[in-house]
Image 1 (spheres, one colour):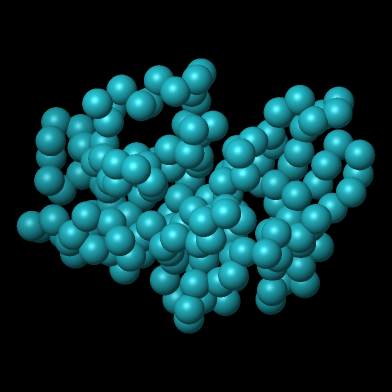
Image 2 (spheres, one colour):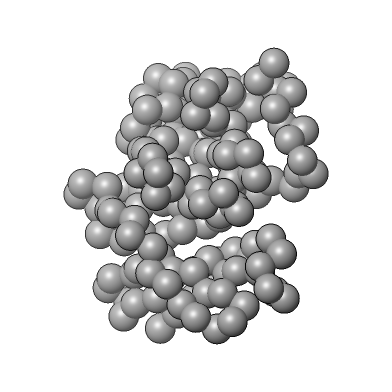
Length: 167
């Protein structure tokens, strides 16, 4: 069984690349299909204690983002050069759960994590932009409401417009 999750039109031959997973239902392997029809498994290790890798986005420089699941879910970024980094575990204030939704061409990651900042509910969700050089930048909540939940799913960017948020 295989499933596509993201398309990268980066000028590779005539159609780009497709990120997905392939497996038997109990074990999924992140893969990339090329426009020539070849398929390559990505050597992305699972976070300790997790059982399923779920990639969600990638860019032309080789960054892949996603989540590992196994009870809880942890968002991560991976590249062959830098390996895997658990974004959820290192979020501001710490988090035991999260998901990386997307990554820009320059490596900015959209991350959603469970936060312990709510006063009246048991959990809140917060969205961040993460950069390897500048860390986590909270995207805030509507009306600065501490009880609001925010989920980041995808980025729509031309160039590096989001870099301005880190200035």
